[in-house]
Length: 217
Ligand code: G6P
Ligand code: MG
Image 1 (tube, protein in one colour):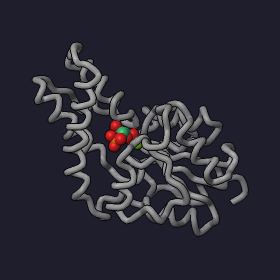
Image 2 (spheres, protein in one colour; image 1 turned 60 degrees about the vertical axis):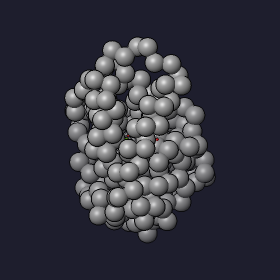
Image 3 (cartoon, helix red, strand yellow; image 1 turned 30 degrees about the vertical axis):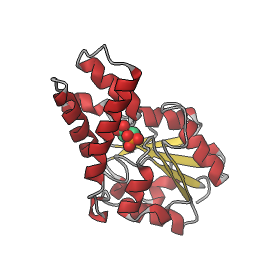
Image 4 (cartoon, protein in one colour; image 1 turned 135 degrees about the vertical axis):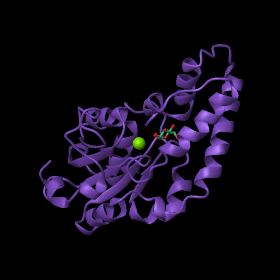
């Protein structure tokens, strides 16, 4: 591989579909406060940090009177419900082709990293038995600026000692694609080309990725 020295993968929606668990936990929280939100609204939570997600949801429910301490308690409650669900995950929930493509990168001498906003990244990677597939893991515990700020991916590139312009980021969120591009990296969107319009390439999943496609980016 001439130009590409590292691949950085978002976790939720790229390696594993945890979005359904985030949705169930946030929905339960909203329902407890007496309102609901749609699956379409839920799309806007992709790649967005826990507290920023809560603020969006409270806005949808016209809940304007919560103190910071109350917000923290709500986010903690959501995370507890979410953790009950992810604690039951198995490697069967790894998205199609994800393990195979990451392994193919490694076999070709390309470094691999996780770049995720989730503070639950270590738990999820352990449940999926995938932690050893990545040379470095940058997650919500080690970054301060949320996507679309490129911090999470730049930290990954730095840890791998690879120049950003030799990195490719795999992302299912609009904010994540923007973060990759802002960091001077290439972005492969995972999902729909109509949504991830800024990505250099969009595929439906890592099962559609090959080293040949990577080389042509
Ligand atoms: C990912 C998900 C978001 C989630 C965020 C924080 O970016 O796409 O839906 O809110 O991580 O996750 P956490 O596990 O820290 O609550
Ligand atoms: Mg994602």
